[in-house]
Image (cartoon, rainbow, N blue to C red; front, side, top):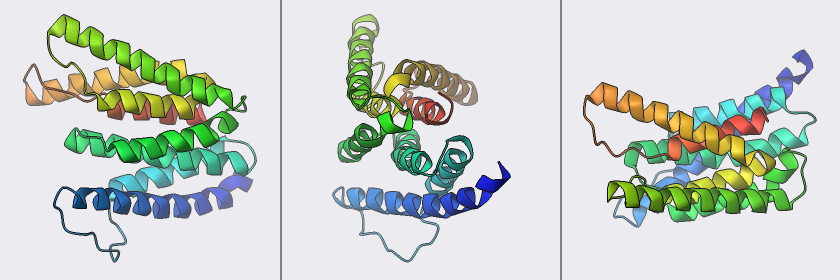
Length: 212
C-alpha cells in the first residue's frame, strides 16, 4: 500500500485537473441556455466535482492493480461525479455529457473489471432497459413521472462502466437513491418531492469501480 502512495498523489492531481475540465465543459453547455461563457482562470471551478474526481483517482490508485486500470477507472469516474453533482443541484442531465460518459464506459469499463469487451455493451443495454421499464411502471402506477427520463440515460452510462458488475451497480444505486430521497423528505418535511435517481446511480457506479 505504501508503495502506491506516489501513484495516488499523482492521481489526485490528475483527477483535480480532469474535474476542472469537466466543470468547464459543463459550463460551456450552459452557454446554450443563455449563460455567459466560462472563464478559464478559476483554479477551483467546482470544488465538489474536482474534489470528487481527485478522490476517485486516489481510490483507484490504492485499490486497483497495476497502473493502467486506475487511469481507466478514473476516466470513467469523472463523468459519474459530474453527473451526480449536476443532477442533484439542477435535476437536469445534459444528454451530450451523459453520452460522453457512456462512451468512456464502453471504452474502458470492461478493462477495469478484467472482462470481455462486450460486457460493457451488455451493461449499458441492461441499465437502459431496466430503468426504461421502471420509468413506464412508475407512470402506470403513479399516473405521472416517478423518475426523469434522464435517469434512463444515466443507468446506461453506469452499466457501461460497471460491465459485469452492472446488477450490483444498479442495486446500490437504487438503495442510495432511496436513502437520498428519504433524507431529502425528512429535511424538507414534505412528501411528493421529485427526487432524481441520478446521484444514487452514479454513486453505485463509482462503488463498483473499486469494489467489484
